[in-house]
Length: 343
Image 1 (cartoon, rainbow, N blue to C red):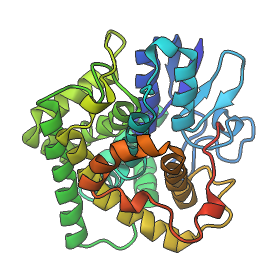
Image 2: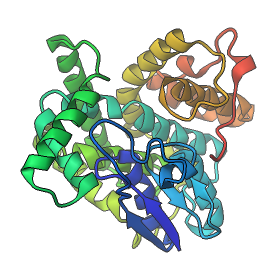
Image 3: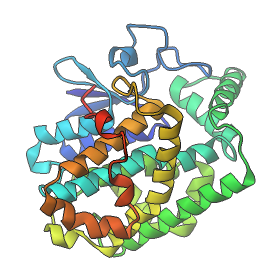
Image 4: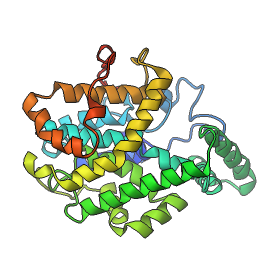
């Protein structure tokens, strides 16, 4: 039995749980209430806490049957796919597998930005209360309110200076993604056949929060009933049986549009992060900006390591999405290509 320690508003927790359900691996789901307050991380300062034992300090964390603790959701999903090869999340074609990983990374690293922005601006009071209730269980309002206020202030401090223009841009990028995904879902429920891949699982985690928070959920329901219902499907695909499509059949206009709807925000974000932290000292990064830069370098390495045939097969799709040039190595990056390893 695997034990998943997740959070009530953590997209990566829902992503990992959806993967366990699809892979039909026996598991339990626990929200670890280990002294979490509005002012600090769960189990912070306690070396024996569940999260500290996983070496990451934030959910999700999974305790494997052998007693080891693992964190990082992306390598974990690759590892679990190896354990259940008949239901693997990795398409057998290397080029298609790369596109799947690209969408998953765009979902993991970029899609939290719009909902995080609106979560801690328009919806701050509701979301602060919701998260403290989720972490702490039953408590009276007199105890809940100061926790929620402290946690909300902590989260808002991470936003930096905002502006009406930034909010408008966030909403427009989010709605463009919804429209691209809605178009894809008019043709197929999955990107690469009749079964999910890493791409769908990455989106599953983020959409769990877009379906929950008041403002972005209202936009989602108004703009796309398909995407809202798709999120419900992705949460539990344990009953899904399906096959992979042939590589040529995967390279659709709808796929390119989905990638293209995420590419501007994703690559501009990554450029800002690279400028902020540079390319040094990335080896030990497990969270934050440095980790995101490391993820992009790993994607660039994966694309460069494809055979010429596989790389050229997916090039038109990436070019149409505006993602080909940004995924090529820039000067100085080769030295810092780092594999994303299991934590």
